[in-house]
Length: 92
Image (cartoon, rainbow, N blue to C red; front, side):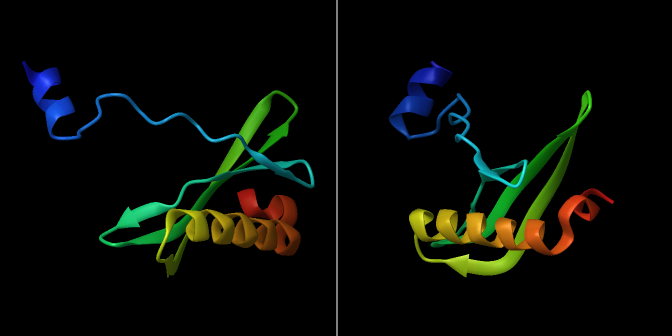
């Protein structure tokens, strides 16, 4: 009964499919904008593999965009900027 009501009211019980990463200087960028009301906050997960270890940095900005597509593009751009400025120090 719960799954029927969830489908009826639009609540998904499954997680959305993970986006393909954008590669930039040996880093993997996963744009993950956060919906806040009618706008989307710029956010991305940045990963890099060091030997057998994968390090992760969660980038969340105060900036918002009106659409998911705009926020996704801006999230990738901000992540690339952080990588270019900080490099491996991003994980410190």
